Structures are given as C-alpha cells and as structure tokens.
Length: 349
Image (tube, rainbow, N blue to C red; front, top):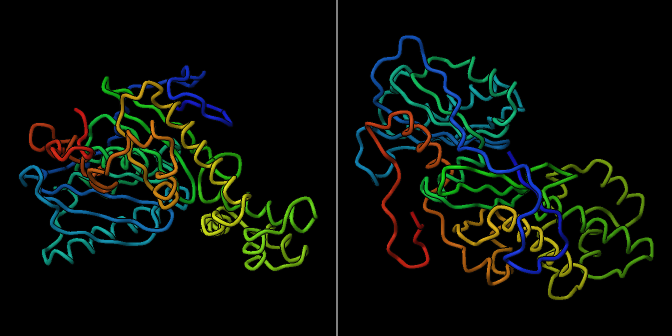
C-alpha cells in the first residue's frame, strides 16, 4: 500500500500528512514449503533484480552478528523477466555461493530461503514463482525494496529512499505497519531518480536546439552523447528507455556548477526526495538511509531537517533477505544485530 504527496516545494518538515493510500500491517511473507522438508540447517538470503542475483549463505545455528560464510552471484532474477529465468539464476547464485564456501551444497529441503525480488509485488508473478518452488523447505518472498528496508535498519523501524535508475521510498513503523511512496515507474513516476534526471536533461537539450533555452554546458554535454542535430536527438530519444535516460544523469551533476539549468534539475530532484520523506514520516520520528547511486549524491543537498535523520545502513538487501529467512525460524535464530553505540549511526529501537 502506498501513500502519495505531490508538491513542487517543501515549506515545512511538519507539513500535514497528505491524502494517501495509508499504512498497512507489516506484510506476511508469502510462504511455500516443500512437502517432505527435513530439519532446516541453512539460511539463504537472495537479492534479485533486473541485472543480477546475489545469494548469501548462513548456518542456521550461527551466533547473532556472525558474518555469513559465503556469497554467490548470477544473472537477473526480476520476476517480470520470466519465472523460469528467476529460479534458474537463483539456483546458480546459490550454487556459486556453496562453491565459494568450498562445501557441498545443502539440499533445498534443509534450507530456509528469504528472497527480495523485483516484481514480487505483482500477485500473478509472485504466485507463479512460489508454485515453481524446486523443493526449498521454507520460502519468504518480498520485494527487493522491502528487503533493502529490513537490511538498512536491521529489521528495526526506519525508512529508506532508493534513488538509482528508478526511485522508491519505504518505511517500517514502530507499530509494525509499513508504507511505500513513489515507485510508480518511468516515465510517469520515479521522481528524483537517474532516469527522471536524464529525461529532463534531454529536454534541456531539446529546448536549446529550438532556441527556447540557452545552449549551456548541460545541453552541450547531452548533445555530445545523442548527436548534435535535431534529427539525431529525436532519434536517440525515440529509442531511449529508462536505462538510457539514466545514463545522462551524471552529466547533470557535472554541469551543476556552471549551468543554472542543471542546478535547477538537482533542486527539483531534492524536493522530490523531501516530498517522499514527508509523506512517509511527517513528524520526523524515523531514521533515514539513502540508497542508490543518485540517492547518495543527493543526500548532502537535502534540507538540514532531512539530513539530520540520515544514518548509515546497518546492512544490505541480502541481509534483509536473510532476516526474512530467519523469521521463518523464530525460535532458532535472529539476524538482527545489536544497536550501534557510535552516535549518529545508532538505530532507535
């Protein structure tokens, strides 16, 4: 369930909470277990998206805070790219992790598998994926962004904004409810993302060629990539998708100091991120982790009320997936590390 705030300027960190789709109870992970599962001896966390799949192994009896013993990588496992491909690459990543550990693979019937996968929010894909379980004893499946939220805050209350090629904000509240903002997808959503910045940079170049805007450093940098004629720019834009536009985003940062158009685009991106924060937590109660290549570059530009809430991540999305796996075995294991005592990095409980 998502909440929404549409605003072009941030006037107060204590603005009223906008009309929204509301907070929901913390989602129960869709579960599918093998019919003849034996005792679980291995936890596996998997982070899967449109470019790669990462798996991390952990002995179910390992002490809290002990590092996982191996990792493996394989191709993409976003559910929108195919259920068969997702399971194939997940299997390859897990096999590579066992190979790196130098041990024989544990049979799936003795493994609890926590997955944060792109596309898991879409019920038909999710259901088809779970139905194709190749024999894992227990499975907890959530979106990759939810796994990132759990990993960033060690399973404790907090919020994240991920801004890379796309953008989304998620929060876990002290009462166990959750909320999501953004993530509507390019081109209609994902404000403050690399793709959004890149598309607006292309518009700056279009304006410059038309004479509607100044041919400043940003327009020149974009045209150096797309081709300098109107025909070439139009052809580039006609075939460009999210990733191509996102490739233009670094040009905006590079031109910021010398081009007011580039500086303006970054101001708008920051305001979009701040709008996400107000929609998620208008009272300033939750710590914030900024994730993604664009998010990390925008963080120093946030208003002080937002920067004061920023902390470093406790873990990564695979740690969040391991938390999901551990929640399948509550009497046996907890992967939530103890709170930090190092000042700003501390996560409130």
